[in-house]
Length: 354
Ligand code: NAD
Ligand code: MN
Image (cartoon, rainbow, N blue to C red; front, side, top):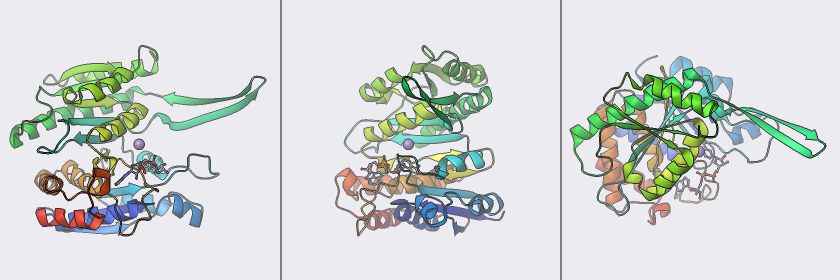
């Protein structure tokens, strides 16, 4: 592997327009080695053409050639399609990207609430192992799903959460700012172990078991339903949320609503050897065919910044975050945020601000 070679998996729908926007920003941000890009296939349209959702070549190229990747979005029908299963779920597993880190932050100087939280979502197990069965019984059909929680996966997502709480506190100290989370580094373990005492119980205990290695971090916990209540009532009081896969998926879309749009919220899939940026949103089929495109590119652009940040390029990432915040403050926003701008107009303003 040489230099900064980034695999670009645009996927379906608005993935095809927001990923090129992120690429333009990566090509223009100062302070990183000149990146090269390789476009890779995956998704539902690719499946319809070829019968394969995630071509082995995509995985091989990522593993052999790329230092990091960006993933756009893929469409996954809600009904069962024979032979199809979501390539993003498979990719996270193939590349062992065990954490999905999702910062949800409001922009200082804009209306709305002061939100500054990071959802750390376990990315490999829980109900997403997709072991489902269905059987006919005299009383009708019964479907079952296996939910897997392991000590290993829970421990490493716990460690990741503690590290992120410490890193966030450090960034806050350096950059100042008087909005959002003001307290000491804090991790809230999200679970439902009052009911699911074995599975969620293991998650909770495993995270707590490594807490002792991070004496600077306050550990809290909250049952997932009351966590959602707090998410609406007092999001300012939440910082790092350590979640099993399904709760993390759900809570982060809720977090996106708090800051105005799914089109704003980035994520990064993190493994020990690979980083893949990915907006939290999906392929948005309702707006995917609009010309010119009105898809908000910010979630993808911020995901590119997060990718750089997790590779150690902290300053260039901060430049991108600031350029995005400036664009939002100046009103360069797409219709999901009440604006009139197109994808390109927002992207070009961000490029000017870099
Ligand atoms: P979605 O995130 O695609 O869209 C939800 C709503 O938010 C829509 O109204 C959409 O227009 C809007 N929206 C999302 N991103 C936006 C952006 N960047 N700019 C402006 N508006 C934006 O979720 P959905 O509608 O539930 O799912 C659509 C498809 O996406 C489904 O096939 C689903 O399986 C897939 N999906 C994929 C991923 C992924 O690839 N990681 C994640 C979620 C959903
Ligand atoms: Mn989701």
